Amino acid sequence: MRELDPEQLERAPGTAHEALEGLVWQTASDAELRDGLEKAFDYRGDITITKKDGSTVAGYLFDRRSGATLAESFVRLFPAEGTEKLVISYAEIAGLAFSGRDPAAGKSWEAWVRKYWEKKRAGEKGIGLEPEEL
Image 1 (cartoon, rainbow, N blue to C red):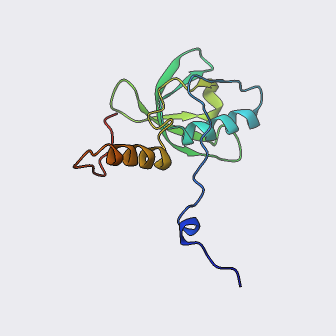
Image 2: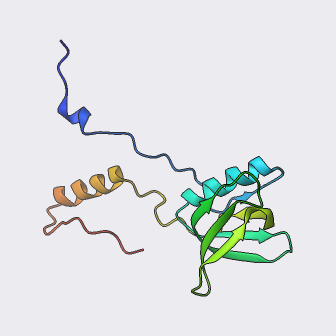
């Protein structure tokens, strides 16, 4: 019987996040629009939606509902300016851009542990589990 290594059991693969910051999503088809909005939902920064009427809306996409048609599907945003949540139909969207900074980019558990041990080896005291300022 093979012996289990407890160190290996403690490591689980994390979620791989695409580097989307600054990307302008091209939406030539309904499927591409849906795919882009799924990525925008997982994105941790603000996005900018360009509507078919030419107007733009920037904010954090916190919810999306995918229906059978684009008219039955919608996203909900916390706008970058203002306080009222916005609801936008997929059918109104001409394009989107990943315009805001991704505050979690490059910050993984492994990076935090590496930084922790570097501080510990340097003799730093009072190291705790406190998040960095955003």
